[in-house]
Length: 154
Image (cartoon, rainbow, N blue to C red; front, side):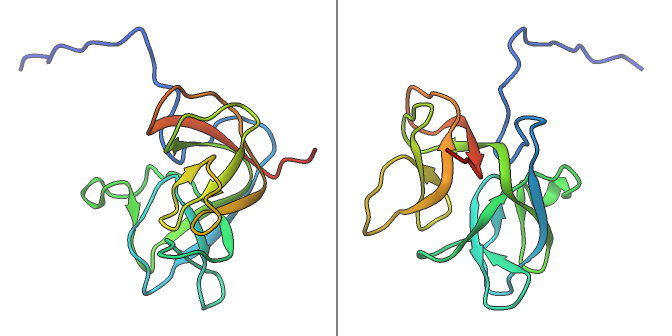
């Protein structure tokens, strides 16, 4: 049996959506994806569901519950998403990687869009400010991986 060739890049990626970014203290809770929710991708913001201990991918503004932490035990066939009734981890404090919709700068405020994605653009009629959150890295364009810090005290 032939051994397939393996190649490694000299540049490793910073991270991927939902990956815990640092070893700084963090607070993660276990929740259930609400019955009526759409699939919840790793690294997306979620809002509280109508039933206790449930969260949902937003389809409109709601009460921010945290950011979904990536879970490598999710079956590959399912993709990088949680489905309704799945148990998932939600970060409430700490740093993790997410996709920034636009270029962000360190210290910028964080806004969640009605689809659970993140930006630094207020757009008060659609995006909601995530209290005590900030961008912890700099990006130069759209849809780039960036570190989001939750629970910042200033």
